[in-house]
Image 1: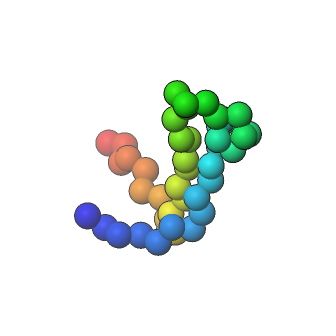
Image 2: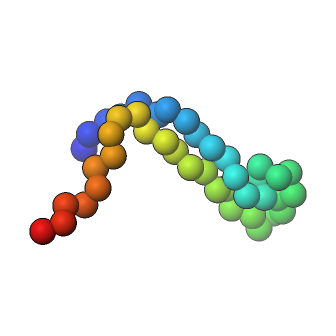
Image 3: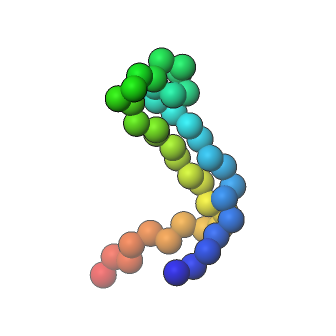
Amino acid sequence: MVWQKIKKAILYGSYARGDATEDSDIDLLIVLEGKSNPRRKD
């Protein structure tokens, strides 16, 4: 496994809006430093 540094963590959805309920999940987007590694096309 390759470890990368976290560049940003973005909370979105009901918790970010402030209207989460007991049944709400946490929506989180993690942006890592470095280049992306798209799938190789043959």
